[in-house]
Length: 220
Image (cartoon, rainbow, N blue to C red):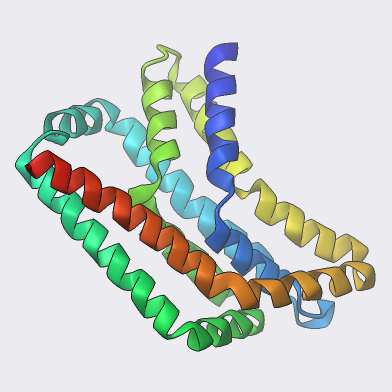
């Protein structure tokens, strides 16, 4: 049990370093306390969708893993990888071309209320879910560990908790430190606004290039 726990924890920690969710959490936390309403809602939305996705994968783990294994080397899988890679490369180009609008959108996040932030967190995570390879690996490890159902639920819950932990820490620092944290968060947010488009474009381009290379290599 200790081995699978450490493996799931390490995958969750690696997965939690998500530049998109962290950037949004920083934007939401950097507004004055009187207008700070979206942080908890965003975290709840992220956790709800990630947890639900993990449960669905866990419930159908044998079938999902069988389909992944069967389709890994198929022509359809390689074509899909190639198409997804080209799409991500195109997205990277669009983000760079409209980087000023991306920064404006980041500043607008600070005006979200709790409900809108929940929807944003759920939506961002839903879009990100198909590429959540650490979550897939964790589900596969949990399903293959031979532990009882309650232990599987605890392991998955631990994964989701560790995934949102950086977001919760950002919100907690902003709440406890207040004015001192406000200055620090505002400075960090300015850097996020400055580099968000470049980081998003780089992540999309690197992932897209990897998918294109993998898909093209499988077809040749």
